[in-house]
Structures are given as C-alpha cells and as structure tokens.
Image (cartoon, rainbow, N blue to C red; front, side):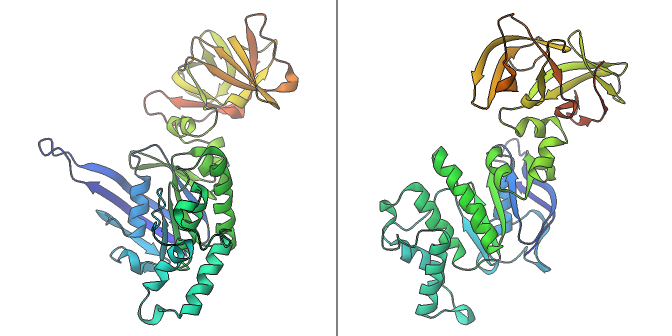
Length: 370
C-alpha cells in the first residue's frame, strides 16, 4: 500500500492567548511512500515527525493537504477505517489480560463482514505471536514480561489485524541499549516478512539509518531532505542534516574560500574549484582525516581513544566550532601524539562546504590539495 502525502500541514492554536501566534507543527509536507517500504521519520524533539504519523493514522486531522492510501483519499476517514496498525512508545497493554487476550482484543471488536470466528481469531493471534517470536508466552500477563517482550506483544497486536500500513511511534525508546539493537533488527525482519508499508518515527539517527529503506529528516515542521540513509549521509543538503546524521557527529569549522583554496585559519587545506570566495562553514566527517606527516591541516592532540579496529584522535583546532575535533583513524596507522601536533590530509568526499547564512550546501569540484 503506497501512501501519498500532498501539501500536508498541521497548525496548532497558540497556547498563549495574548500573543496569538499559531504553531506550525508540519509545514507543506509532500512525499510518496512506496508500497512495502520502511520509512524513517527522523529529527529532534518538536520537529513534527510524530504529528505527521498521527495525521497518517487519523488521530489528528490536517489543517490542510490530503492523505492517500493507494488511490483512496483517506483524509476524512476515521482511524478504525484506515486499516492501520499503530504501536506507541509506551506499550499500552491491558495489565489484567494475558498476552493472548491482548493480541486478540482488536479482532474481538471487528463487526459485520470483517467479523471472524473464534478459530480464525485464535489462528491469527497464534500467527502474529509466532511472527514476533512470543508464541511461548501467550499465557503470561504483561507484568511477567521484560520491556522487549512487552514491545513485541504491542507489535503483534498491531499486526493481528493484517493492516495495510504499520505506524511505529518511537517504539524502542523505553528499551535498554542491547534490547534496542535486537528489537530494531526484529522490526526490520518482521517488516520484510510481511511486506507491510511501515512508517517509523525516531529521534535516534543510528536507529533510523540502520533499518529504513528511506529516511525523511525534519526540522521545525519542514522536511530538510529525503533519501536512502547512506545517500543522505554522504550528500547532506544542508548543515542541519550533516550535523544530525553520524556518530560521532561531523566536525564543523569556520573557514574561508580564497581563489579556489579552502582555508581553515591560515592553513590552505583543500582545493575547492568552483566554490565562490567568502566565509563558509566547513563540515569534515570523523572518518575524513588521513594521518599524514606532510598534511596541510595541523591539530593539537589531547588524547587517543582506542575503539578496537579504529582509534579516535581527540584534538583541538582554533577554527573548530566545537571544543574537540574527533578524527577516526585505522588502528594500524599508529597515531603518535607525542610531538604535540598531529597533521592530516583530508578525504575530499568527506568534506562539505555550507553557506554561513542559510546553511545550504555549496558545491565544489573535488581536487586534492597541492
């Protein structure tokens, strides 16, 4: 089931009656979610991702714009008639019911032509429990389950209706780190197995990038960039997107372009043909530094953090916007910080220029320094 969002906008009235300023939670969102894909809505708190999800689900009505499931306009359709499965951050299980009863609950409310026999309901519940691998826990109450198991029950309950669309609102944020990793892999497996079009809301960029077919990066209700996770990481549209994606985050420097050379402080670090002269913000991914005794960029190292296969050199640079510059180097390179200076050359495809005012990406031709 493809989902089409046309000029989708949601405006909330002001909480402050005196100022009367409305809050634009989602602003003119246009996107076609392909059938059978998993889409990650990604951004910081307050960016409009959950509001977008609630409009797709029918829990909130758009101020303007349309929502289509396939060719059907569902903008005015009630939540229960949209054929969706919804999983919230808090699992919202009924504590007095067993796992089986929780999963069966949505089926017991079906009426008319959708009504199922008892046997059909039990078969569906069993199948949903098998899919999320909790078929051994059907007689337990929610209080007897771990957080990860409770989340699986919530997913099974959403899947048992055989929805056309599965909507997940921050489904992993209540789990510890190891369970999050395990459960996000499970969500991806279930989505692939069922082929259900899925929209997954998260503020965790690593989570979104690891399981999504495409990500939508949002800021203050406005879509910043849409694309495959790796493509958005490698080719950010603006400084916000570049900063939001990546662990450790991108290093940002104050720089200037003069006659086709990029300067950080007084050091000419890269030829950037085609970039206009002027002050710029410069983003360099942590993996974009190469240890090079003759390299054009010099930093003052503070310490080396061993990460196994890689090491992270933590240093300072007068043009850096952050207190620390983080460079991820292959452990075999043998980072030596005893001299008090570490020199780098830069991988051009890991360096981005941004307009100082607008934050938009400035294109340039990739030519290595010197």
